[in-house]
Length: 114
Image: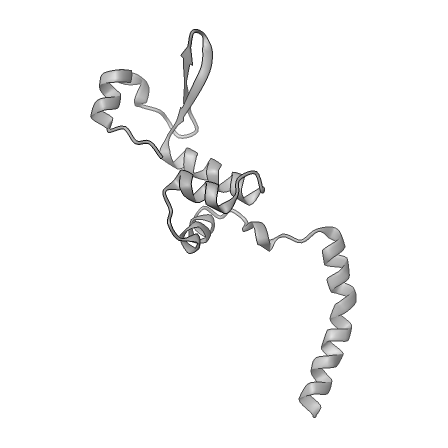
């Protein structure tokens, strides 16, 4: 992850670094967009949402956020109230689980009786 101090950035970009939440700055080279600058909070939420949606791997998201431990990535998802990728079930998985629950309950009841 590359970083730029605000002093260096201001000398390069001046007033353009004063972004409002949800606002971004597009930097072009020869009229072609090459970079998009967000506030840190917006960029963080975009990376976390990308990980949650399966667009980014855990490693990619951790690299982009400067996180070394996967637990911190999961904490960041919780702080931003973004659903964990492993917390979702497909409709088929949910149906399979609902069909299996009565059998699982019966097995557990029989084990507690013995």
